[in-house]
Length: 164
Ligand code: NAP
Image (cartoon, rainbow, N blue to C red; front, side, top):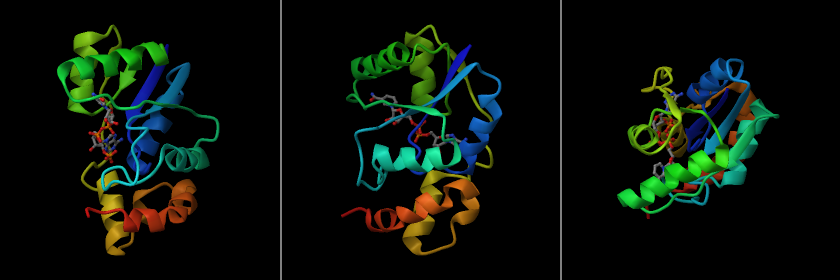
């Protein structure tokens, strides 16, 4: 059975790492879907798809990462987005913790939804990693060791990309 784990990975952290470790073995084909692939250099989405992939690949060199662009925000746009997710991945299972993604998968697709256990989401969150880097606080305990160097390489962007 095939599964995809959907996220923005801005940046990839220990919570995401644990999910990959947990499910990679369970599913014959396990891939990541990188949402908001076309967005970058905004406070919520500072890193480009390429930068995010580099970070993920430093931990999982072989993993497949499919880039998915956002649609608009109407219900019709949402339906198109989730249909694109189903068509482009051909996956049977979607792993997500995003309420909108969960609803869309259940309402508009034949895919099965798997809600992963969040690994201490208050602490292990991309928003918290970005905040710590911006504030000059220690952040390395929130990310896997394999990702530290590549995130360091993006530190300047993560520090500088904030609300105008
Ligand atoms: P999100 O709303 O940013 O993520 C959901 C929440 O779950 C985030 O707080 C995330 O934390 C957290 N999370 C996920 N895995 C975790 C883990 N293992 N441990 C701890 N926390 C975890 O959305 P997303 O699921 O990352 O991405 C959904 C993507 O689908 C977005 O790119 C969105 O734009 C796209 N989408 C587009 C449309 C459309 O275009 N109409 C519709 C639906 C969805 P982190 O911030 O730490 O990752």
